[in-house]
Each structure stands twice: as C-alpha cells, then as structure tokens.
Length: 267
Ligand SMILES: Nc1ncnc2c1ncn2[C@@H]1O[C@H](COP(=O)(O)OP(=O)(O)OP(=O)(O)O)[C@@H](O)[C@H]1O
Image (cartoon, rainbow, N blue to C red):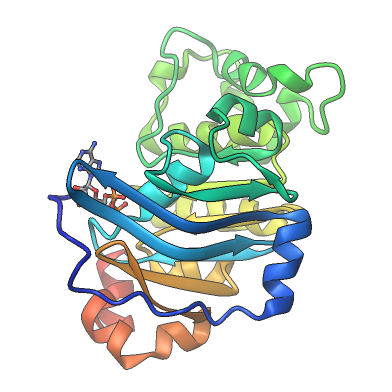
C-alpha cells in the first residue's frame, strides 16, 4: 500500500473483453459494473466494468497504489464500494459480507497472510473449510499435502516461515472450495524454489476454477494468467491477452520496467 493519489489524471479505457466473455461472466461468473471506491474525497478505484467467467485466469497489475488490492477487497466483500454493483451468477451481491461470499464460492488469499499463531496448521485448514465440513472436495490433510505442508500438520501456525505461511494461506482458501479464487500477491517474499512450487500448485488446480491474480512478479503473471488488466491510479489503462500486454511498450516502460529488469528485480 502506498500514499494516496487522485485518479483524475488517468483515463479509464474500455475493456477489450468480448461481449461473449462478459455474457459468460454475467450468467455464471463474477461481474462488477461502475465500481468506485473512495476514502473521503480521494477516489482510489474507478472501473467501468470487470468480469470473471468460470476458468478465467486474470491478472491485475500496476504500480504501487494502483488500486489492485482495493479491487480484490471489493470483490471479496472485505470492503464495500462507494458506488457500483457486483453480481455473482447474475445475483446482486454488492452488500453481501465476505463470509457470505466465501460460502458462495469466492475464496481469497491475502497480501499479508495472517495465521492464528496458537492453532496447528491442520486446524487452520479445518477452519478454512468449516462450511463444507460434511462434504469436502479435499480433506485438510490432502490440502496440506498439495501445498507441501504435510509434515507440518501438528506444528503451531505461528512457527511457520513466511513462505510456509503463504502456502498455508492458500490451503485455507482452497478448503473453502472456491469457484473463484482471488490471489493477492501470492509470490511476494517467496524464494525462487517456493515460487516454482507455488506455480506448480496453482497450475495443477482444476480448469473450472477462476483466478484473479494481483502480482508484481511478471514471471508468475505470464505463467498463470491468460488475460491481464493494467491499473494505474485506480483506472484501467489497458487490458488484453497477457503476452500482448507484456509486450506493450507503454506498459513496459511506465509500469513494469523492461521485462528483463522486472524479472531480474523479482528473482
Ligand atoms: N484505509 C485507507 N485509507 C486511505 N487510503 C487508502 C486506504 N487503503 C488504501 N488506500 C489508498 O488506496 C490506494 C490504492 O491502494 P491499494 O492497496 O489498492 O493499491 P495496490 O495497487 O494494491 O498497491 P500495492 O501494490 O502497493 O499493494 C493507495 O493510494 C492507498 O494509499
């Protein structure tokens, strides 16, 4: 998070998503229209439309303070929009709480994962799936195995390293059986080995699971996302297939650095 900036100087360009993409999301996915979030007089997000259909792998990138976490928080219901409407499966959920949205299939991980330090790793995952405890897709042990924490099940969560906390955060989110997974900088602070492990896990997840990935590491974005939206000062400055966005010289120069320097900065 960085210091606030007004969005007034930046024009929001229309999304390049097709009508078919938007229609798919309206019927079976997550959509936001006219989404605006303000802190007092400061507008930090102003998006005409944002749509996630089943199976979409959608990255949101942009410099610090661009509004990326704000967008995830609005979709997850952690905060409410100043104006705008959010729908899930064509049902308006704008004022639904985050717990309701989690039960409805919107899962998330956090930019700064917090754990219950006194609980065991296994119990943290059990809590993540509390509303599915009678028919989990995956048992807590299976999820710990998936994220490489099988050997830590009985450890206190507070004793985990940063990388392991990130993996636990992911297991907790998956325990809620999301159909849309919001990932807030999942690779931040991970070693190269951990980042590779994270990519292996995320790419192994079922194709119907939609993901919105906020991430600064373009290696991760390129590996995971087929579509990328670039935010700046709370507005969309472009979107498109990830390879095209990454090759866009304006995006590269203004927001990412050259691909080479960006990759180097995150290795
Ligand atoms: N509680 C708050 N009160 C006032 N301003 C806030 C608050 N939370 C966030 N902001 C401001 O909103 C803007 C968007 O913040 P946000 O965290 O969404 O950006 P971001 O793109 O996720 O940045 P980063 O990459 O640094 O995490 C920033 O200017 C930030 O300072």
